[in-house]
Amino acid sequence: MLFEKLSEVLDPEPHHASLNMAVDEVLFATATEPTLRVYRWARPAVSFGYFGKVADVEAAWPGREMVRRWTGGGTVAHGGDVTYTLVIPRVCAFFRLRAEESYRAIHEHLAALLTPLDTKVRVAPFATTKVSDACFENPARHDLLGTAGKIAGAAQRRTRVGLLHQGSVQNTALPADFAARLGAAFAPHLTRRALTQGELDTAHKLSAAKYATTAWHRRR
Image (cartoon, rainbow, N blue to C red):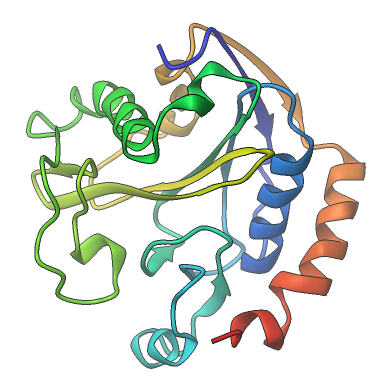
């Protein structure tokens, strides 16, 4: 297992794209132990990496709600996927893994959960030639591949506070309880708590000040 214990923040209410990103950042700033959040989208959305070009995203996904992530990576469509975030504070041993090692370890444990659903699940041994900015059209090393191609990818950000890992699972049939089982793939001991009103209020303020602004969307 990746962690001895894991705290899962329950957040069943679908949020707009900017608020989803803000909640992740709030949890990242305050978590004192490995934390998982699985979340939903209020409407079909697309997130794009910190260094992405908003004009390219607008051209490829007209009409979709868009948000620039704090993490890197490519463009990811949301709404039909299972989206999750892992927050690992710097005090955790896992934080000391190099970026590539942490990415591989998370996906290897995710693969163990997905393999019974798709016998062709495997960790990509290398990146493929880039064909677009769409994350799921460009498997990176240690992404998860399945019968239909790439089925799981993620993006990370590492600071002095800890590690933020934002992931998506899609392009494969998932049981209704998959999201509820995700935490068990990462830790044998799981505690669950609701997202607090204080965390949500702080996230609304951060969304309005940062993730929902034109300055953030068009920073490049």
